[in-house]
Length: 259
Image (tube, rainbow, N blue to C red; front, side, top):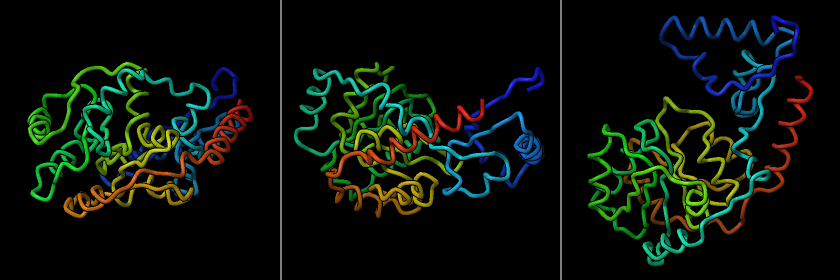
């Protein structure tokens, strides 16, 4: 902008402007509110304004997270050998997949705590695929002892696609500090699988807006979450193709107009 060029920017964590604590959030809010009014700058949140209207104060437009439509451009290409291996491990059970580095903010302890609950009955096969930080290694080991399969390493692209191919349920139940768009949620929607989301989150509201099935978890009542999980059936409706296509078109149009 300072050298006279139109600028378009994706704001990945706009909720950081609205923290009730700290001078940093106040300053960030003031900066982005000012930037959003400049004619040469177009700031886009990756959560639509229909989901979170307050983001209108700090951005010009809310668009769908690109991870809700990117697989229209780069389709899923699973390793069918790896997919068969996972299905053999599951033994006909529904598959719940936790994908990516098991960072605490992703709710991995809550998942492990669910498996440690007396009501857990292993009717759902749990797969944790991704690097395991030391901070959660104890919880992961306990989950493994209760029947989870852990692949504690970097997952290749074709293996990742294989997981989305075979899984029925994808974990996207994150901590309150990470209430934003989620790649695992977006890819689950594109794959036509059921995401696990924390109750009251932005992605739950997005799913309600597009009438897409999710499994909601209340972190303060994990027993209820277990009941929902054990009663959850695979999604038979497939991906919401119309929404995915519309999201891509709106994103591309808005970016072209911004630049």
